[in-house]
Length: 426
Ligand code: GLU
Image (cartoon, rainbow, N blue to C red; front, top):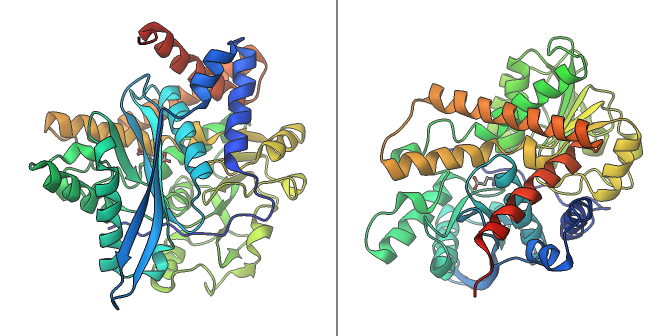
């Protein structure tokens, strides 16, 4: 089983991520000269569902949580996106994340629209049996709108392959037969794909190495800082170190550890597995989590939550390249500042797309009931990530825009084209 992703508190300056998502869309719509109708079609979610989730706790007391599932778009295929269990979940956050899923799938040419789900709960405060009950009740509440041809959930912050197994089982029991393709990111024993659990972090590292090369840097001799030690951050630190990059600082919500000569990542991951945090890791200097973002490194990988690079700290970022492992880690204001400072920001919808790419591979394998080898999955993932990088770089060059603008433009154009080709019903 993969470990549950860490849950840092949102940054002090963090804006509403929906404002950032809508701002990015508006800029793309203006560049593409779309009319107000088309803009509205792209801005508004197709469908939203908010549900109450009562939980009988192990001690008999009942608590009620709120859950959401937002389906932003279906123009290119069924909706697709993760489910987040976090105390910071709001409907607006889920809306923003659903919209980013639409662009991510379109950009990487994965035949889905975008969706996202969330439950406002801190999973660290609940037993495994309680989390199972919450997951099953949430699944049964959103059951009418999900399905392998409608909307396919997957893991995100605070959820993992065990959560997906419960979702798959709840859905299957309700319809009366086993439907593995209703979710992705399942355990391999239930039809999950080899390589899915490492897919997001491997994808981040393919892009990070391409971005370093673009700036004339080799992995050996380059330095990196990684924020977040959940599924994405831990894997990114590990694969960067394997590629020869000196990972000098890694942090979670409790603190960060720094070693100028490079951290021993396998040992650090063993330590965090045991203690639940990087703090207390021997042979490294303890520093403040915020300081991690401001160190003089070649590469910064924010792989935790939204809004960590904001108006209040963007001017202090000294990294030459930011590769967004998290969704929405850079606010719109910070994005402009970083660009003005000459920082190359590789946007989330490209950098962290490895997860949904291998989710797509899992769905394809499940639908065919024919499974690929780990090498096949990894090769196809790398090819798609590097094609995505090359196409975003080319669009940025030819249009004279940032990588984020290029990625958003390409994605928005593909979704709008599918919508226009299908036409309006009735
Ligand atoms: N939660 C992941 C993301 O934000 C993966 C989504 C999926 O595989 O559907 O991209």
